[in-house]
Image 1 (cartoon, helix red, strand yellow):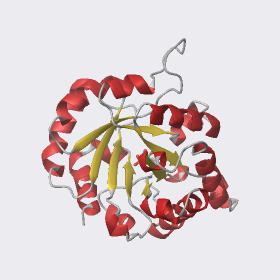
Image 2 (cartoon, rainbow, N blue to C red):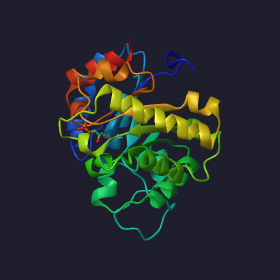
Image 3 (cartoon, protein in one colour):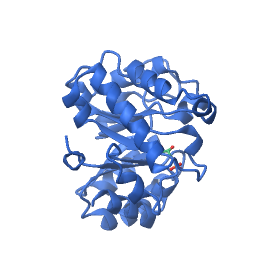
Image 4 (cartoon, helix red, strand yellow):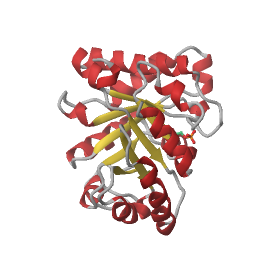
Length: 255
Ligand SMILES: O=C[C@H](O)COP(=O)(O)O
């Protein structure tokens, strides 16, 4: 499929930022700036901001996502939030397997797979994050690692369910560091992910798959990254908290 036929997806990952009142304010600022976007626009917020985000995005072209979900439907899991709880609030997307969850909260490829299963069963679309550390890149194992993360995460996911999955390639060394992967590096690994989908499913599924890049994407470097044939959008951290910068990235994805 021609890249142009895959609509770009720009998702903000707010991480642990913004109170509900601040979330409303930020969305109100973003809304007019992205209203003519020719790409999907999503904001993924902390759990406590979801009600405010649902309210503020009403009637707009901005979708709302969460930053994680548990794999069980309910039970004794203090501090966790289920996929059903999120979908009951109108949430459409959930980020799963972000490297910060893997690094700081012990998440593994296996728990990522369980969370994806739960999210799909609750009707949520998933933004699955994969990516290598600097050490792994230097060892030359980026492609194998990213392919393996993708395969394990998608275990038991049908071809039909795959349509509700977006994959974000996020090299850990580029997250929040100001160190962006070059457009070529980003494209190479996004292509590896697409090839992995082709092997696991088929060429049509690989062609239709949205593969984002994430890691210090900003208003200045977005156009070059988003111009790459296998980069279909971005998962944006820091710049998603700055309305003008986020809007600039959305504009770059709309070309
Ligand atoms: O999920 C977003 C990524 O972790 C990228 O964060 P960043 O844009 O602040 O580098």
